[in-house]
Image (cartoon, one colour):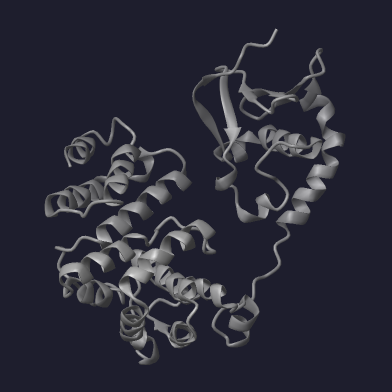
Length: 337
């Protein structure tokens, strides 16, 4: 708790990531306390986006905080805040070993989880679900999902959307037809904010519900085809026409030299390491921060001439794309001869 309180006082001077990681690690095998929850609430209230690194990192941090504080068992309940308050209410009404087993199951919910259910998450979920018991789980899910068929507009908070996705994942892990039918009640849910409709329905992909089916039910809009992949492909093919004055090979033929709008860069053709010449910092592509359209053409590893070219293109236009690179902590690039 003290590290959270100390970091809160120093948020304008130090990065905010350490305490949340420590609490998350502690929470895996322990329960939160009232004092720790108060400290986390204060930390969250004082957190600002400009205090961290990339937008992606700060988003992940906030998602972890959301889920930790959703597990605050002492915070006053507010049904107008989110549909998931009914889950918190029923959990708090449990006692003894049953409450402990349900706490372990709910602790496994993730705020920073990907769109599709990871296999590792599912493996860890199976014994947690078995400990709670299929019958008890089925009964609670039926009660919690019943409002989806009420026809009434429901509130959905950010942590509530993560809880909903996680509970749907548990239904999929159970491989139970009755639970599958209950999970599909979500198709009838109405949300106060229309943008929550698509967000809430994503998890049903685990039951084979496709975007096409959702669109046919007028639950979501068809996506307009994005021209970005074709655009990037054209840029990649045209790089050979524009690299003569801004991308050249060095004399040892093992280094690609890139003139960006803001900096010069050297890319090692043997290791893929990128040196920002102005401060000799070693940087790397933050692949997970790239928009989905970019990741169609740019792979996580620099494993082909095409991937070298795509990174060179981004660096040539660093006035726009510098946000997708990050410094390798504690590393300076080796000086070139």
